[in-house]
Image (cartoon, rainbow, N blue to C red):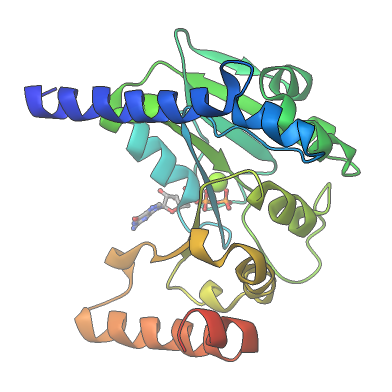
Length: 238
Ligand SMILES: Nc1nc2c(ncn2[C@@H]2O[C@H](COP(=O)(O)OP(=O)(O)OP(=O)(O)O)[C@@H](O)[C@H]2O)c(=O)[nH]1
Ligand SMILES: [Mg+2]
């Protein structure tokens, strides 16, 4: 790592740590003050939490593997990711089950109440230091599809709940038809009502979207489809 990058990483870590301390350290920390006022405040984590969501096979898991430079998440054309996986970096490579995950992240306990979820949440700990991976939690989610496909738990509810816990939500649309998946659009619409500032949209697999002209057209189609939803039209593209 270059000297400048190392300094910027140290600074980012310091800022995140100090923000956390304002909430948690000392008697007059913000969470104690909130308690006195009868409010519950969640201290910000020392890492940025990023949830990835979108169509099946849009490249969500591949993006995480690319970012951390390690093949931690299964990828492939078949439906690969069935549950929620928190990918984080730590001292040793480890896979944690659902119970161990909520032990490590007690704030995620309520998600276990979603029927069928307990066996479909886990944590993958990587030792990666690529691209400041130590400062990020990724949450990989199951690919969204329409039709008769049965999920082992209510995936829409799980994504909507998790959105409350994250700092950023990356929505992956892949160009091969699925960008218009109704379930994805439904979830994005619901998310944008409450979490609009956290949402970022990506056209994934852009290399498969033909030439520049095809890419422009597919982007236009996705934007048009999103704009058909009144709340998205109002908040994102108005
Ligand atoms: N051409 C191309 N293929 C990609 C890209 N990103 C991922 N893929 C391929 O697309 C397929 C699906 O990738 P995944 O990362 O498993 O997609 P996913 O969104 O996690 O899929 P689910 O977990 O099933 O929802 C794999 O065969 C990847 O190798 C990309 O940028 N370009
Ligand atoms: Mg996946």
